[in-house]
Amino acid sequence: MTTPNRFTPETLAKAAASRATAKSAVELVKQAGLNVDSTTEAKILARVENMPHFCRRTYLTAMRGRSRNSAVKAFCSMCMGWERVEIPLCTDPACPLFPYRPYVEHASGPEEPEEPDETEGHGD
Ligand code: SF4
Image 1 (spheres, rainbow, N blue to C red):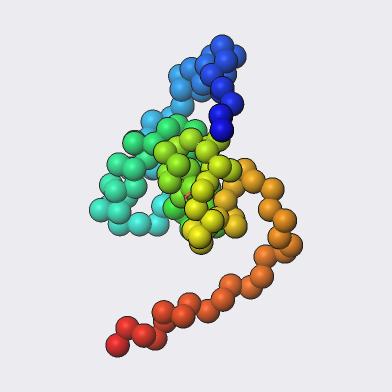
Image 2 (cartoon, rainbow, N blue to C red):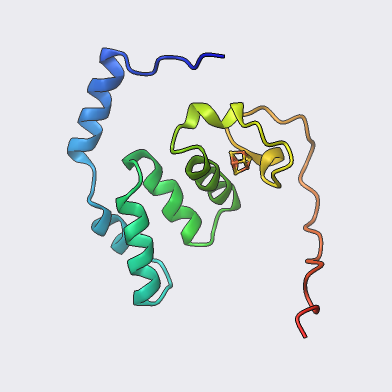
């Protein structure tokens, strides 16, 4: 199976322009309004610095705790080495995120209410 070639002259120019105007990782993390302690913020910053620019906002949206969709998108992107085109090609249907992975048409209907966590109350 082949993946489409995303690196046309137009996409490379667009990516270069985007990088030239992109905010630094430090700026993005400071502006994200994360409600975390300084140790956690440092860990988040380290992760942001090591991911492609186009993934940073989705990741930080997830880290604000306001979007499960962003969390799934960020996690699948990390899992696939930041290659979005690989996510629809995921070969692990047993992964609990598989039915929710982004960039795929899902045949499911409206989302059902969350199941109670079966591990709760078993820690004593
Ligand atoms: S669904 Fe696939 S891409 Fe997403 S986290 Fe699971 S294994 Fe990784």
